[in-house]
Image (tube, rainbow, N blue to C red; front, side):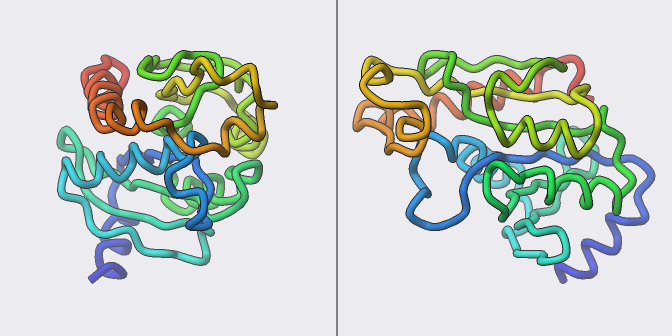
Length: 193
């Protein structure tokens, strides 16, 4: 079924790819740096996508479905965060998806937890997964939804230690709502079409 769905998708003229950035070993499952994976899970559930399945040739777990009448592939790179472009580049090339139809969901160390913002293009803001995708694609002209992760404990840790840390109990209790609000903002965004 998954292979048939993938072949069917490859014949479509226009589609979107939404990439969630995160780290794949299980020990990172509920860390701040996995906001992208968590948001993709929520998106897949909301729109009834297929289960995520590892597709080694793309170095990613993929899920197939439709959002706003457009065929959409959800992608969780199974590379190191800093090499996310190694999954995104080949996937976009195989399905002939233009950069304008790419959306990346990621954590943002410069925003407070609970905030989210959409950027149409721009710098990576120090997020190395975004940096690598931009390098591989040769363009930063893709849509991104950034979820804030900064909190009152941020100054006690270096950046790497902080992003790989677990959400606080208070953050965990708000996580579903924060993700839902961010995704709703994305779906309603005029460039998400």
